[in-house]
Length: 79
Image (cartoon, rainbow, N blue to C red):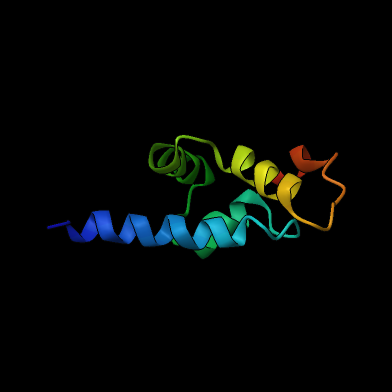
């Protein structure tokens, strides 16, 4: 069986994957919406669960989306 903490983390990461497709949300916004007060801790947990950072995941899903968004200022979204 899985512990409650493990299941909660898995659910948070799944929800974060959905939210990361929305460029209007900063990493801090995504972290808070999935239940983390620290965006750096969120990044650490996300990377441990998916083997890639939230930024890398966002870039990958945006580059694969049929509507190409301007992601040149993705670095600004981290704040």
